[in-house]
Image: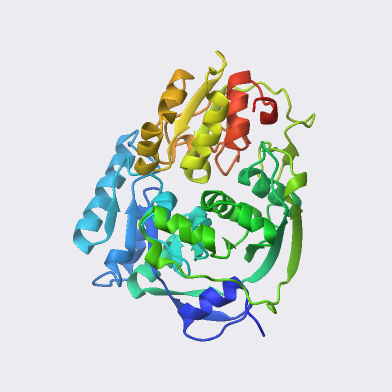
Length: 419
């Protein structure tokens, strides 16, 4: 019997062949926590009374959610995490380096790896064909102590991508459309595995966007095969030697198959207060809605290609006078590229506000909280009530192209009209 990507990746780390439904103990390559989940994770680790981390150089701590810290309590959490890293040898990523998922993608995670994190969007690493998933703080503490953890091997849903996207349509529209179709619980504890000829048309940063939001359909992870695009991207990062080609077996058993015609996709918008409340941008549900804030960035769409797309529309234009525009690079490396390519000049000329590399407004801790009754169109991954700091605000999700066009118009518009 052939194996899915999920079965294959877990088998390599469990030391034996596995199939969906098996309970296994698997070796872990990378572990991460951030300043929101980190304090509890560390306290759970300390409660285990282990003398040392199993893999200190592969245990990473990120100060990215409250960066810089907006209040004393969060600053004290940062102090606590810094002290833990000094005491144990865990790798600390300071305020301003960027979002945990982006840093892991740039510097560490490779095809075939297994990564767990105390953050639900750890599934971003699936873009590299790494089994990468979020877990609870206690589970991560155990992984930190033992260098391994348990899994129920997930069944996989095969998502077949056909054709090629038309201008104005992006990877964000693929995953929003899929979540809208499957529902927020349509892939609960299953792996989304992307295949078909349409995969070849997606660059690595597009794949990371899609994988990042797999959890919004309830999925354990979102996996792409590793191919020439993966190799090329790793080479641009100076990590070409870590490439390995990985594909599912032809005879693999998928519990469900879903097909997406990329050429038929339109730009999508997820409406409050659920990620699966999705409509086409030209639908009556969203078109023309006035918005007071636009956010371009975060761990979903804060990469260089995302900002290049936004710059296509913002070049020579200004934000609407009644709409704030926030730009949030996913990492310091991304910010440097924005500077070197002149993209930052385009955003500043459009009267955008630059936010420190990190999570920014997405989690509602600081930088961009909404006022009562305000609407925000964001490229982030969640639009739950109160997500951006105010349960009386509304969050709409869309691609960088849709966000940029809407910032200019002051209302939700079809980006294809601005290209």
